[in-house]
Length: 196
Image 1 (tube, rainbow, N blue to C red):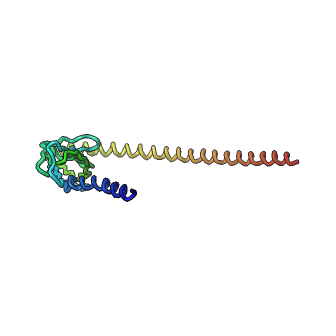
Image 2 (image 1 turned 30 degrees about the vertical axis):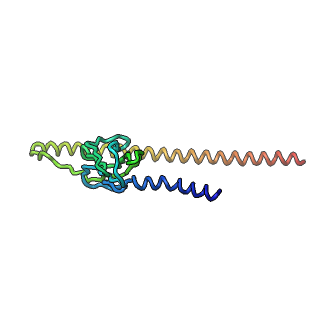
Image 3 (image 1 turned 120 degrees about the vertical axis):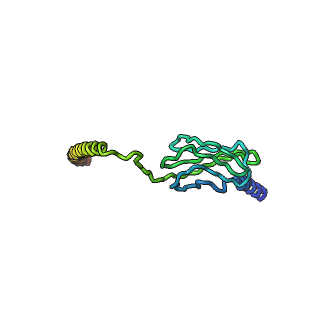
């Protein structure tokens, strides 16, 4: 009887893995953990078997869904076009497919976008504009220098505060030790009187 129960439980454990093996994700673009360094225009997920039209996916960044255009199901593939270029950062593709057996299966793919941010000047500056820019730069430098001076002053105040905190904590520890010593002496005297 025990052997039969053991065999049945083994079979029950194997069935879900066999089912998921047929309807699992076989490849994706981007793949799990991939660092994307070029402009990603389309997401393509390929599964082990054909999937139904009800299958769908979402692209999520920081808990917000990013719109995908034209999500299509073609035999074993689920694809979607990204509406606008992605910003740098981590993303999650959350997919839900319906297999041939009608059971929905969910999963997700994590990837990161790390593209170089190219800053290009569309209109070159004229000489008058560049002079104004130089004046603006000098004013910006002056503001930055003033803020650095304020930061230095605040750091000095913080250091003084830290030293005051250290002195007060040292004082508290000293008082605490003195109280313990006094308590110990009183306790010894009290127990000594009881023995007599």
